[in-house]
Image (cartoon, rainbow, N blue to C red; front, top):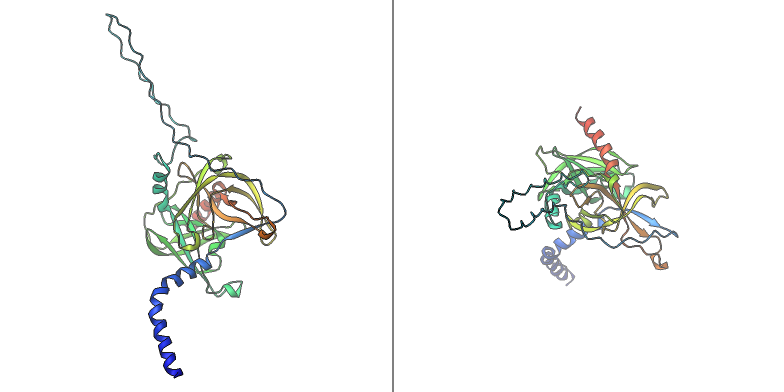
Length: 311
């Protein structure tokens, strides 16, 4: 009788496996998605501002010719006023008029990164662990910028680009700045995101974050504002990370390494961490406090790493 019950149990498991397989696979990815988390102690950070309405791209206002008075003398044609040339801070990287069009332009440059950590991992528990994060294509030769903590101790790297999973190699990285550079093995002219000037950011300026939270919700878009500049944040290991951009755009596990973009479609930061309360039950919960590494700092390292990789 016990043998018959075992056979019935096996048949039931076999029938249900096809139904729950997809759920199990998604849970496996979402459970392992990495993210750096800063801990908030007794100190309270200032409240963030409400998201601002995106500023429309500047357009020239047409000059209307004055209505001529009745006269027998022919009225000369009005002189056309030349359209002023936008200053560098006004010039848009993409000629778009709304947020949806902007997302359509920059979205292909943001990728999802899947990592299998090697047995040489410092933490034995993390050996053979599968994690996921985000990255930004910053060079048409296939160079991708991401966080160091996403690819740390990686044995195998796969990047989702254009619906394909492509093999990638680790080029260089720096744990202190939490930045790393990858490169796709396949040679191709890839879509890239233009660099922006993080030093020109202003408090209240509208931004959006693009990344793959939970490793499954690929290329998700969240919007917010610049809530703070030059922030220093305490980490779990009691160290401090400084010079960060603060934003209230929603950032979750798996967003690490993704893009923080201004309303001109330019990369102004690499998403690196979010703030969580050390004791939410004591009434010190935290919402909408995320941070990114400034693009100016990231670009200096990237230019150096690419030059070293292409002597």
